[in-house]
Image 1 (tube, helix red, strand yellow):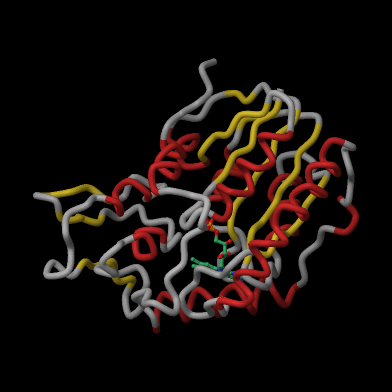
Image 2 (cartoon, rainbow, N blue to C red):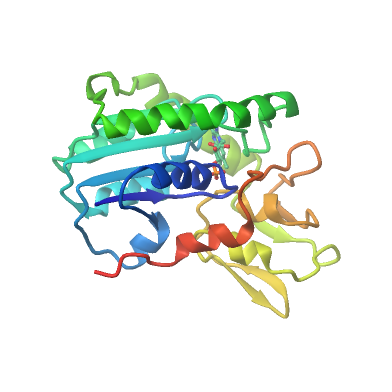
Length: 264
Ligand SMILES: Cc1cc2nc3c(=O)[nH]c(=O)nc-3n(C[C@H](O)[C@H](O)[C@H](O)COP(=O)(O)O)c2cc1C
């Protein structure tokens, strides 16, 4: 039995997780945020973690997941999806698991279009990355099936740990103020897509308009999926150039990461 735990805002990581799960025998998908709401003993022999890179590191909610998940699998792998630079993400996953005497056997990056708004991937690069992804995922799946092990190559440098990541979050939080979510009521048509896609269940609707809670995981999904570009993350609002969602993923697909799939 195998399970892939995933986090996804704009669909890249969900696409990767789904593509791999189809090829791995008896593999189910489970949302990281849904697991954290109702943790349980994971019985699977193979456990995968698929998530985006945020500020050259793991998303904070994925760090919490790795600190808390109850599991003793035979084989653990991690795929981080990224625009261009994964920084310390894989080394961080290895260290967090090691602190719990768990071993990250295989860690790998997958480049897909960047949804950070600050560094959007140009359309030509987006197409190239989307076209390359199936073959790259095919190779990753083959490696997982062969229980490939690159443990010795997963490490993080001092530079990323104390430099890149801290600066990245400082810019996003202090200058861009991405924690301040807002909706332009004049543009909002009350479709509720923002609430559907939010992996944290952090958005509720009041008379059709979004109300933001305090549990945002900074995936930027609400802003990218909004068909009216009505949602802003501080000073960041996706426009025609920066708006991105994975072409094979629909908002309803992302809703599943909030529902618990394990029946044990
Ligand atoms: C807050 C934030 C920070 C990001 N930081 C990085 C980064 O440091 N390096 C990078 O290559 N991509 C970065 N990205 C881009 C995402 O990692 C990438 O687009 C990912 O595939 C999105 O996955 P998703 O569609 O499953 O949410 C960032 C995205 C967000 C929202």
